[in-house]
Image 1 (cartoon, rainbow, N blue to C red):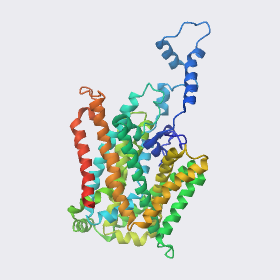
Image 2: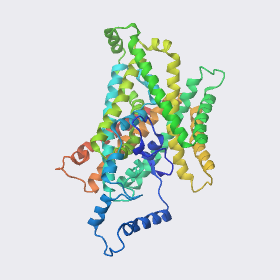
Image 3: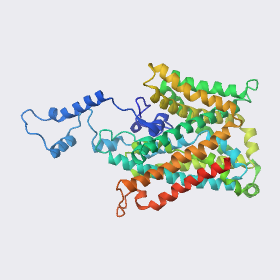
Image 4: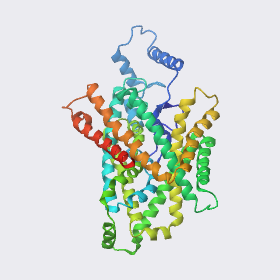
Length: 482
């Protein structure tokens, strides 16, 4: 991710932070860079630093070892942090886990029942666990590639920046990899916006039956866009964090209430009911929406930066942070497909509707924030004025999405299928093993005797298998839609 305005540095994320969409966007497309004149000024200041530190009588140029010793003893303003400061500024496991959970849980959970209903609970639950394991392997692989590139930059001036997904693709796969990542992201963002807009209209229709659903979708999307445009990014970030916390709280209330009531069914009766409706042949139909609901990979570059390249903590955060949403989704699937479904809807209608709107709203805020920042970067040399640039970028993201959501029947389901089955699978399923493979083959990183070496050093065959499996998922979806 490459923009001048971000909500906060990752090292400042509190353990209680639920979701930072600026970090999500920065992880996809990078940080802003200095112009040549700014960089020249910075380099000039750096070149004078040691001259200022040394006494005037010491005319002999210091050796590299002496300069390094001085760096350890004295930390000057704007100089690189010491090792102790890096440890103090690194993030916590709790903060990283919270960020992953908040990023994962969203409107995808609303699309689950429609797709998993035909398969039944046990097949769909099996599919969820399998997709979670697949996505976890991809996440661990993506983290290792990111940390490897960060270690290679440790002596560079930008070594403390987040290495974005686009930059990772650029440095490993070249221009074609960066282009694939960029255009796949654009397609993913548009399909996601179509899904959120369409679902918002469906959710609001029962309360405003005299207004057409596409008009309600336009009003809801305009409200979200206005929050981003008028409130500036920081206000949107704060609103989104509060809404996300409320959404997760309501989800806990819904699931706890449903499980405690159990609709009057015994455990045996519940299992019999579930098993009677199983159709294992329907599993492929559930995969896109499950992937859409479980993806958090766009935030991984931020997690690597936040945890200061500590692969042990990064692995723990990815495992724990992804496991919690999986459990939420399994319980939600059991509730919506099980015998407690009607009891749940009749007794908690207001809570369920509020949760659904919050899920759509938080997802839309996050996606629109990142998408509009992407277009701002593309338009910054063509438009003058901050407000004009912000308005134009938001309009480019919103208007096509609203037109498509109004034109497509069942746009929410179609868009989630495309986003999960194609965009996310290509971006977070095919590209990570491809990046690792190119690192292994062309960058001389192989070290079979180092137990701490990245996973892909020891398992080049596994990389091929992971990439082929992800490609097979895309091909399967393509064959279904032909």
